[in-house]
Image (tube, rainbow, N blue to C red):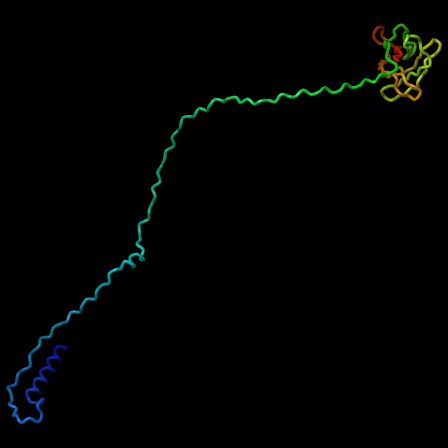
Length: 226
């Protein structure tokens, strides 16, 4: 580039000296001695280094920087035996127990009053064992033998003997034949409709005779109470 510029400069100076710029003039162009063009020593042009862009703040913020991993240190604890904590003593707690209110006693169960009550119940060993009987007497309120009263005898198994009527001779007497088998018999006074008129008496007949212990005859007396 510098060489070209130097050549152009030299041509311009030559033309001016020869009078090119003064066309139509009467001047006599006096030739000038030839001047050798200057000698140029070529030199190398060093390229200008391009500026290296410096990282901006925005790129610094946007570009993540690799960080070393964070390793949390886990402390190691050795278990320590603690002494047992004594428990507090138990304190009894008392509650107020409500006092039960006195309740009225239930009314007494009315005991049915029968017109006849039991006057006597006993085994009869004097009659021996010539058969098995339930017998006795029925008396009025004054203690006199009372004929015409119905006496009903049956056992616990449902064997029912029809009622018998106290006799006139001897007065107030009755007797009922029972079996010679061991059995429990029920004796009561009833009316003509079979309604109960006295408490019921249980008689155990063993079927044996042992003096003073087991009898074949059993006596039950009733007395009129009203």
